Image 1 (cartoon, rainbow, N blue to C red):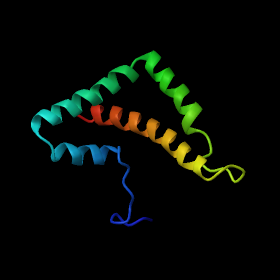
Image 2: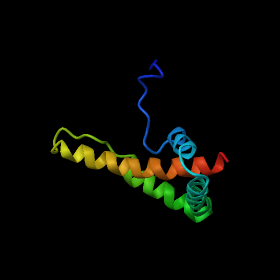
Image 3: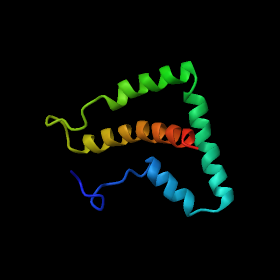
Image 4: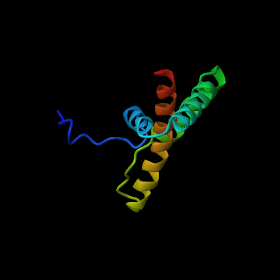
Length: 97
């Protein structure tokens, strides 16, 4: 089991968003909350959930590293995965309020 001090934090995870929120002005906090609420509203509809599922299946459910490809491809794939994580974490952050 990973020690809490060595656990790597996602730059867009809910905990990270909460830390960011604590270190910014009230106006910036409201802007962050509004932005995340937009994600939740957009992807909270039936159509939005279907689109997010399609995006997730197309981008996030693929292998990151392929021994037959240039290693740089792995960084590209990680970036694609991060898009999905960013969206879902912002939705979850909005819903946690």
